[in-house]
Image (cartoon, rainbow, N blue to C red):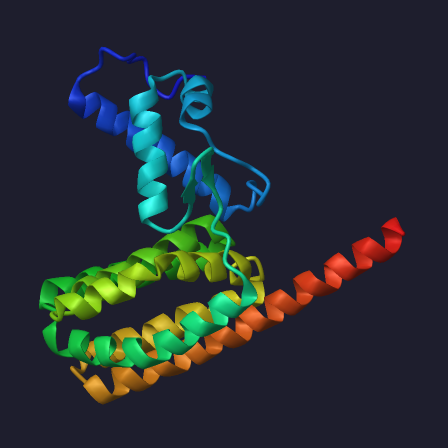
Length: 237
């Protein structure tokens, strides 16, 4: 079914709207685990599925790649392919950079930005209560992106955004386990409270613990995946 009635002659604003719809639909599939590592998204095929021209389909795919959900290849877009070692190395990098970034954000967030973070947290809490993993994932992503956007050191902010692919890859694994959801929401809430107090030390400490907790959740998910692969191989044998 076409996402809009417009074709290739649609206005620029219409194309952007169509691209946004395709982006959101594809992102939902990724967050729900409906796309595996063997799936390759090609702009012409996506355009045909949604009944649109190639341009909005490609724009949606490029945006997903920029956000870390997809990785461009010479034959389309795939889910990020990071190996175990790379993920652990970037956890080390996060421990070095994110505490300083959170401390700076605590001192620079405006009252309007704090109010925005509060609204996002309420949204995340409602999503968790409803068991809506996709909505919760999106709310936590917006929360993280919002406080990072308030970091006044531009070079530091860009460095944090540079490893978004790893963050998304880990999230897709850890969000699959609902037992992690209260820990994630609680961590974000405590970080927000430190921001409200303008407590740079508490914000730095909370995000450091958050990264350690994220690594522990990732390692548990990685071990579970390994055990499932071993079981599948034994059954196939």
